[in-house]
Length: 166
Picture 1 (spheres, one colour):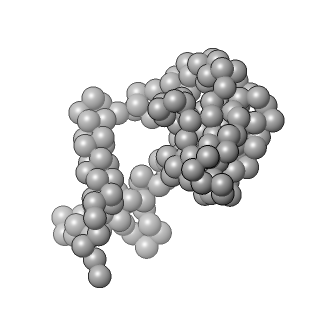
Picture 2 (cartoon, rainbow, N blue to C red):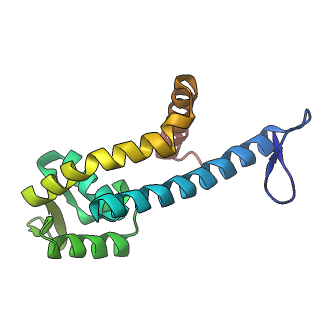
């Protein structure tokens, strides 16, 4: 597999691993963008909940004590520091999250999931999971899903490993 000048994947017997890597990267990005758009639309239509809100609520729900420092929440939810702060402010106004000062760091704060936030997350979960199935998982075989998980986890582990670079 290689890419043409338009960045589209094309087959070829002499495709290099770099070409195949670029094709895989491009497919990952295009698929992510397309599926996220569908998930956003479905979740908003069914639950009136933005996908970014769902992601933040999900990360807080899975954290110890259902709380995270703002920086850690941004890393887990894959959002910029400014964006996560705005979303937490919106969730706070909606009564789904509260901010608590960090007693060990006056500049820092915690985002804490409220019971209303947990209830909203639980109510939205079936729509979210259905969207993942319909727009992503159902289009893949079990073997393809396993290969995606294995490959992407290996890439992620390499990014988390101590840098051997200069």
